[in-house]
Every structure is written in C-alpha cells, then in structure tokens.
View (tube, rainbow, N blue to C red):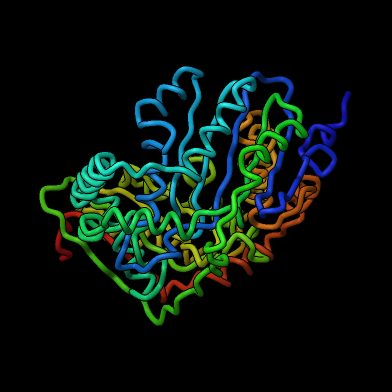
Length: 429
C-alpha cells in the first residue's frame, strides 16, 4: 500500500519559483484531473488607502474583470465563457485575492486574461457607474440586514476609529458615492504590481510548464511606484465590556455578535485556539454554544463561533440569530460558555474529537485542485514552509488539554467583551 506521505504536496512535489520581479509561483501537478486552478493574491488592499476613501481598493478589484484595454466587458466574459472558465478578483484589507479555473489545455488563455485584468484594466466610465450603482444598492440593502449590522456594530466597537479593522472593506454609501474615476485609476497605477504577488497553479499541468506560463505573462511586470508591504495593525486595548445595539424596526430576528481580539495566523498558540474554538462553537452541531443555545433551548436559528486568524488582530467571536425575546438569554448563555472554557479544561473526548476532525479533514481538502491551491497559498503567505503538511498531523495531535486552557485564557476575558446586537430588542423586565 503506498505511503500517504508521498501523496502530500511537499518540497519534493511543489515547484516554488520566485521570478526576478518578485512574483512567487507555486506549481503542483494533479494528473488525475483534467482541469487547473489558479489561486493567488497581491500586496494591495484597504490598508493602502485612507479610511475616508472607504471601499476604494475593493471597488478597483471588482472593476478589473469589467473590461480591459484589449477586451471590452462583453469580449472578456465571452472569452471566458467560450472555454468554460472562471476568473475573479476580490479586495481585502491587506491582500487582494485572485481565483480562476479552466481546463488544463486552456491555461494559456486563462493566464492571458489574468495579465490583462491586472496590468491593463480599462476603467470604462459606464462600467464604473454601473458597479457604483450595484454597490450602493447592496449597501442600502444591508442597512436592513440584522446580521450585517450586528457584525458592523461589533467591529466598530471592538476597534477604535483610527484602526484599520474598524472600517468596512466595502466602504460606506457616502464613500462609494464620492469615489472619482481618477481615484480608481490612480490607486491602480500606484499600488498594483508584482512585488509581493503569490500565485499557486494546481492541476493537470507539469509544474515547470505552469511556471514558464506564468513567467511569460507576468515576469516583465514592474511598478516602481508600488509601496512596500504594510505591517498588520496592532491589536486594540479593551478596558471593559462594551454593549452596542443597532435598532432596525419590523424585524422578527435579532442578530448578535460578541467577542474580543483573537490570535493572528502566525501566533504561536494559533492551533490551540483553533481547537478550543472548535469545541466552543464549531464541532458537531456548532459546539458547546450550539448545544445549549440551539439544540437544548431551541433559541437560535444559527449559532457558532469563529476565529478570523489572518494577518492582523482578527476577532474571536460568537454569532447567533434569535427571536427578540431570547436575545438577552442567548447572550448570557454564550458568555457563560466563554467563561466555562477558561475555567475548566475541555474533556478528553472533546479534544480527541476535534483532533480527529482536523487531521481527517485534510485529506479531503487535498482531493480538489482548489483545496490544494488555497493550502499552497496559505503556506507561502504565512511562511509555513513547503513541508508544512509533513508535520501537520503530529502538531495537531500533540496538543494537550492544558495547552488549550492556556490558549483560551490568553485571549478570553469575559469582563472585557464586546456585545453587539441588531434588530428590535424586547425590553428586559
């Protein structure tokens, strides 16, 4: 029976190449499929512009696939449709993500289109206004979305106004309305470039050929004005519990979000907090929180916890959608579970269950091109190393109940938590 280690993407099977202009290419062959996936990111995001121009980076990213100097909007998408391919760009805080897929034989066409959108976008005024209208419509809709508003109220309470994470990557209705065409073109001209770009190519193509293909379209891309990468923002200081509410009349559901600052992806205790969070609000029927709030008491339409775990001080939070009369009780139950997770160790059974889940889930992720590509991207982005997977299972299995308790206590302070709700609350008696 073949050794499963030989099937893992490792330094022996991943071709990592850094082009002279700074683009890092990660190529991995999966001969059992007919397709290829490209998954990548660039060092550009909302961290690179003033908060007064909220949504600028995300707006530019969306516009890239709405026509290039070589192809109109219709011609660009017709080319994609003719080969059954997809290509998208999504702006974030520190990075802008690229995602594409096609048949392996159509990799040259996909790379040609990727080059076009990154290097030669059109910024057609008609498409700019069309996208502006779509974004304003979406933001207007979100004004009445209790889940969205709870999340926004939470972020704005957890992070001070001068902190990057305080602001919505998508901007506001006011900021989107005020963006000028010159703002978009100037941002692209200054910030889009090869430095810091990572591109993973996974599928039925030889790694050397995939690398040569990327180089043929991107190796001569240079932008001397591109700024240096921006370091993640420092975590905020929370002195005491904050409670905020956004009233939205006529809603039958109240959404709540509560939590605090959690670990970055590079934190030493990231895996321990990941396992704690799974026990708390992910595993099975959404963990302990789901067991009490949703299953036992039947108060929540959904209920779970999550860790952002990205570049900067992302939140560790729990979210739930409940009836207005249950909002207060659900909040107290969730806070109780946060308190319990830092005062007593998880059980042996809970620890073994979440370890089994995380080690067992990995082979499933590696079944697909997209799963492998996204994993390669994370390995490069967070400096995990090409042999990260060789030690992954041992790393997870080595964690103890004591380590999980210590990690939970490091981040969770029930007396310093942000509690945000949105909807129509029922006054407490």
